[in-house]
Length: 342
Ligand code: SAM
Ligand code: FES
Image (cartoon, rainbow, N blue to C red; front, side):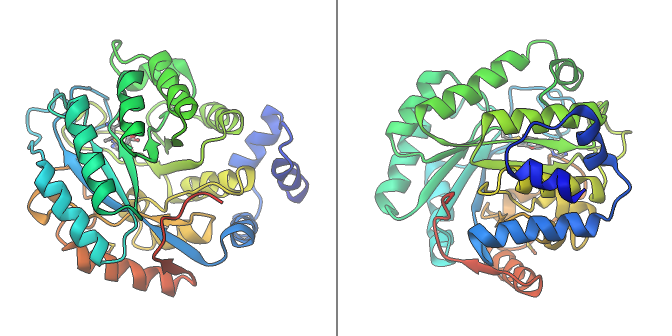
């Protein structure tokens, strides 16, 4: 295992069998997590970056089979925040020490090129020391360019799975794998700090699919990688599938840290949902980012991607305090910083 990890760190290409061993193998996982933590401390010390997550819209024009806010879910409650509400969230976040705001939402046509551009410009002019991250799904390259010109710094667009065949089992036919990949490529070319990522334990995912994800990350070299367990949502076609496991998710986080030592990797809310200490364990396995929720409490529950999502009742201030305590108890420290990749 140690030799494989050394090779992973030098950027070596691993064979299918070697990857399979690292992902499935019967070795001491604790040792893997400790190695990942050591590498993370080399580049980032004990620092944990916080990102203020603002869920701007639960309207979505896509129909991903796993997602609770997919357009075919008639039971989903829909809301969208106005520009003014988004700016209020940023104001509150700034006071609480956030220097990155993440605007995430479903693929909502209300958020036209111009509207998003105006919000980005407004945030950047009011808080020039802050980074703005967008996570608004697939859009024409021109939109990405305009938003980048307006000051957006980063873009999160999980690739979801690097296997085309697997992608087609998770999405309806009009959602194209090639399009998702083309968007990621465009974001990177434009100059965004780009985030890819995938769910662990999504339906029909085996080790072969996870190997494809790792190889994709190794070639694409994103600055950010979001990895969280799949969690079923009761009103989706995947309601009856089991959630991804804690151990497998932590393994993929640790392997990603070893392969991309400087990456920004969140300990995700989904990880905190499948286990009470999930986010702390994520940090100890190589993650270095947490994303407390800054959305107004009145709409939190409506951004329901999966069942039993945590932190839907807390005010932003409570959520930040809770996370500061958790991060400190795990042996790290939340810092007030934009937290760009080193
Ligand atoms: N619409 C944007 C997009 O598609 O990138 C951003 C919002 S989307 C809801 C954010 C992420 O939530 C997705 O990339 C997906 O990986 C994750 N997600 C959706 N449903 C999930 C589920 N049931 N379990 C775990 N994660 C889920
Ligand atoms: Fe949100 Fe604990 S992190 S309440």
